[in-house]
Each structure stands twice: as C-alpha cells, then as structure tokens.
Image (cartoon, rainbow, N blue to C red; front, side, top):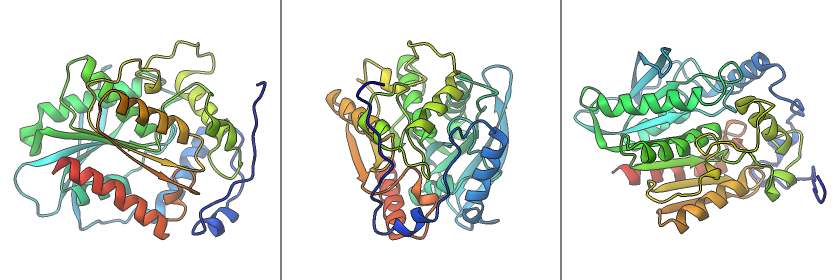
Length: 320
C-alpha cells in the first residue's frame, strides 16, 4: 500500500517488558491451522480456569439457534444471591474462530461476581466453518432468549448488558445495532473491550503494530478473511463490522477499552468518538504500552489487575 509505514519496535509498559521479551513469534497466518489455534488458546487460558469458583454457581442448558441449530449456554449466578438481578450477555473473543472454552471464561465469572449479575455465556458458531452472519445471529437469538426467559432466570429485563473482548466486542456492538434496528430487547449497557470493529485497513495503529510476537495488523486482516471469507467484497454490512454503521444514535451507554500496542486501538477510539457525537454516554480507557489481550499473558501484573478492575467497576456501576 503506498505510504504504508510499519515498525516492529514497540515500547511495552514497564510491568510487561519481561513478559513480552519471552513471547515467541506468532504464525503469520494464525488461522491456517485452526485446530492448532484453538488448542493454543486453551493452553494459554488453562492456568486461569480453576476447576471450581466459589464465587459463582453455573448451570448448563441449550436453546434453539436461528438456523435450526442448538446453542449451548452457561448461566452463571453469584453464589448465594437471591431475587432479581441484572443480566449480562457475555460474548467471548478469539477472532470469531476460537476462544471457546469448556467452562465459563474468567471474564464471564468475574463479571458475574463483580457486578452481582446473572451472566449468560453463549457458545456461538465459529468461523471458518460458520462465517458471518452465523455467530452474530446466534448471539442475537441468545439475547432474545434472555429477555423472554428473564423471570425464569431471575433477571431484570430492564438491566441487561452485553460485553465481550476483541471479536466479542464486535459482537456486542453489533447486537446493540441489531436490537435498535429490529426493536428487540432493551440493552442497558455495552462493554466494548479491545473491540474489533472495522474490516477496512485504514488506521495508523493497524499499520504501526507489526511486532510478530503479538496480535498485529496482518493478523487482524486474517481475522476478517476468516470471518467474512477471503473473497469478501467492499460492502461489508454494519452488523459484521460496526464501524461501518452510519447512524449510532439511540444506542446504549458504552465503555470502550483500548490498548496502546493493539492494532485495534484507533478503531476503538474512533468508534467511541462517534458514539459521543451521537449523544451516547461513553467512558473510554486506554492502556498505554499494553498489547491485545495482554491480561492473559501477564495476569498477575498490577496493570492487568487495574485494567480488569476498571472495566468491572464500569459494568457494576452501569447495572446498579
């Protein structure tokens, strides 16, 4: 691309420098061997997945998907909590292609405990076996189910949030657009964590972040190829890439988290700015010197703990 500049030199946050120095290069195309990518993510997350979390109770169920498919969901409730609680639809990340775990993710469990909310963790269909719109329609079907079954689930249907990281941030933003346009369930809050929003390679952070040890601009391009198909055209729908939406009015209040060494940083900040221009209340937090999903690589760092505490506090405040 004419005028395109890249650099592999990054300046990590001092708390993360040693961790970054130990990371091996990632595959140029992390989706070339999708089963290896899924296995690698499970290995990364395994230390964060205790066999039992006393903070929450979990039950598993299935519900009808939009295409005659069945969706596996896990319903988390704060241990010992009674009565009607706010609800959170948690949408996992993983490039639309991996990131699904056997048990509820640490983020889903943290959201349940910190916000005092019933959390629904949905296992939506994954690319490349199921490209757009399968995954997002699965998530929307789950949102409709949450609202319809609110009494059974002990959820206040007026206090339902959607949240997720990376691809989960994309799906969360898309659900807000879909619920508005389809006059669907009311969403009280959207938590967009390091969201993947724009299929167009047009931001400085997409071009600048090229370090092979972390998720970089080339990897994000492969993510979109996997989700939409390598022969995707120029007219991507906004429900696939929410940054393409021309009207952001009437959307729920938002929290947007970005990281300084993330190729997705600029599109997240741009989306936040556009939400503000549409009179949507937005809280923004940027973490300088941190890369995409750094918390999984340095979970014990003070930076990871502070970052997690901040978005959980925003979720708790919005729902309570």
